[in-house]
Length: 286
Image (cartoon, rainbow, N blue to C red):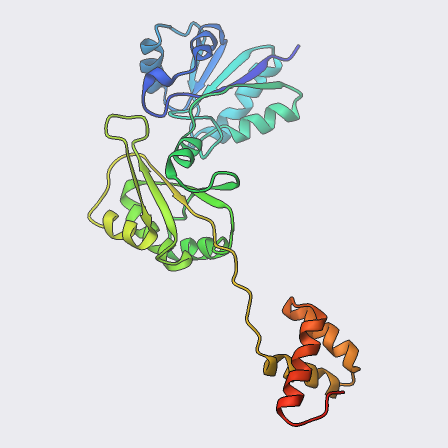
């Protein structure tokens, strides 16, 4: 009989935020896979529990190699607990490969919900939270970073990023370039810790603030792109477009319908524009 894979959230700062079930799972797991085994043991000690099961490291460098061993334990009936240094596993942290492999082998996967830097920063940012998307870490290389940001420059949902402190200033400057220096944003630093700080403002100002250097764990929240302002068409422009389509062989009715659809306007508005221009030019409306 297969075992079960348990994904458990860990505190992102204050150890008191650990979910009560985490201590229970640590005490019951046959295997604990941790991103950093030393940090895990410190956390377990703070929770007053000594994991009786086997504790193994599971981080980016050994994730691929260790996944088969953990799957073997799961298919052999073990209860495997997966934890990362902070927050929920798989969210820009190890976990996805193991979850995917467990699912493929028919192993049950469950979770102990816990703290999340993504949701914590989002709620503290003061930006819209009804729709958002998590973009993970911004690419390190400037060219890749610019290309990735350009892809989401028109995204209307609020954007959430993780960033390291030594790359924060460069990333904020790149965001200001891609999204506009006036785009509202928030830099959330050291969430739930002693020196927690949420700095809100336009991207351009935040980039200047971060330039001298910022410390701590960083989450950046950026407002989505504002709604596009409809293009304003003059009567002359609409009439010119209709005339051009007529010259290509379309009937007046077909031309007006096509121009109206392209401009996002009612057909009547385009017709009235054509008539108005003809009258101004001294031509009889037809």
